[in-house]
Image 1 (spheres, rainbow, N blue to C red):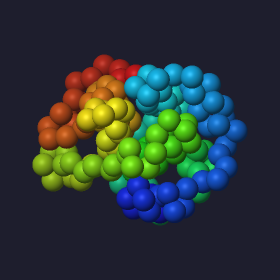
Image 2 (image 1 turned 120 degrees about the horizontal axis):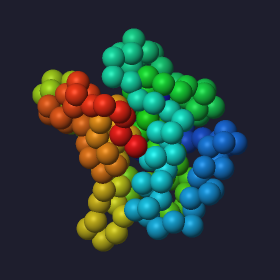
Image 3 (image 1 turned 135 degrees about the vertical axis):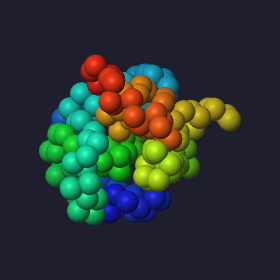
Length: 160
């Protein structure tokens, strides 16, 4: 169930991954922590597009924790699904421990709940990872919150 916290996700953590997902993680393992997060963020966004409106319609998918079926979905993914993919890639890299990740919540337009991941990359050094924010034109390290969600109204192309 994707809507649970990191520790709950770990209890149902996939033991095997789709081959393509494993290859993406494997080709990035030589990078440092920050570079790995950026590269995986971009790799996941290359094949999986966050959705703004249709993610509401597909809300029953939030109860799916089968990484193979989730990996097959390519567009209109909710922040929770995007974070499940990111958390899987982060933890499967071997660079991070469960204690380095925390799921955070914020409000978009001050009423819509939104989830992102905060990752510890060093002593007292953290980076926010929010792949769903690309749907509204934000970049790696930025979090969709408040009214910056409205960027999608004027953006010319999705952020990479």
